[in-house]
Amino acid sequence: MPARTESLTAIGGRITEIQAVRIPVADNVTGSETRVSLQFTLNGCLDSLLPVLSYSEVHGRRATIYVTALNANNPQSALTRCVAIPQATAQVSVPGIFQPQQVRVVFLGAPPEEQVVRGQR
Image (cartoon, rainbow, N blue to C red; front, side, top):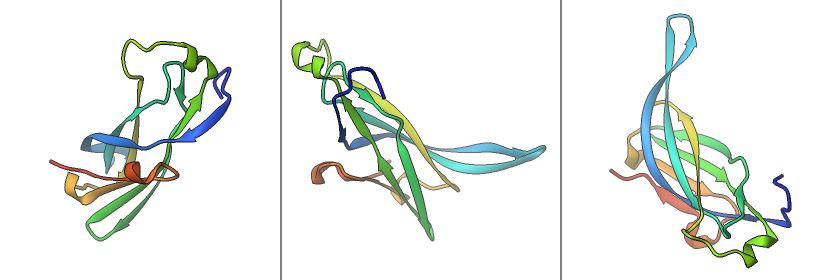
């Protein structure tokens, strides 16, 4: 954990990009996955985003990615003024090729208004 972390808070995020990519599996063999870029607003200027955990489920042509994102709360954030709203990014993936409208991300433990986001064109 980052130094001076006093507590952790589950946070939701938003999808910034969904892209299909080829990945090497073995010599002369590639697989495919859909990568989802996420953006998070941190709770304070000196806070950090811990490594994001994800689990994906595929049902037919739809993919759901369950994400746990934790904000590491630094008590010094209460005494610090932000020049800009603190942001952090992360990337999660699901095997296979999916269009943006076929991807749903569920943020576990986040406030209800931040829990589910769908990919869009």
